[in-house]
Image 1 (cartoon, rainbow, N blue to C red):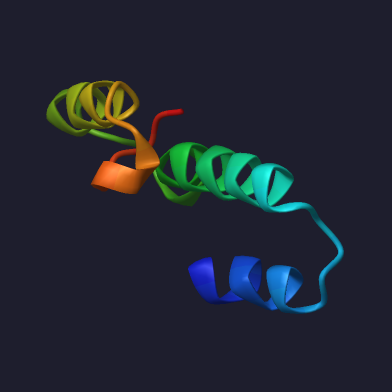
Image 2: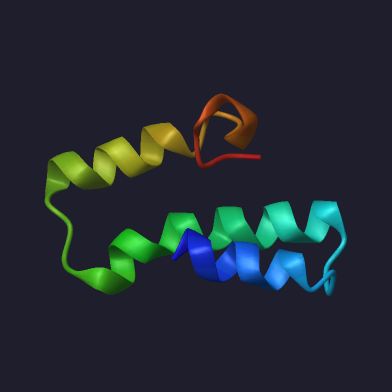
Length: 60
């Protein structure tokens, strides 16, 4: 999925800020649309949204 996102960025369609927001949204929703999460996985995704993306999380 990230390769698709980086392809969009390569065409310079989005500003850097918009690109980061799209990437974060797609990474956050992917587990929910790919299959049903276990309770443990849901908690993991929730905890990762509190960590900034520049530190490897899914958050701001």
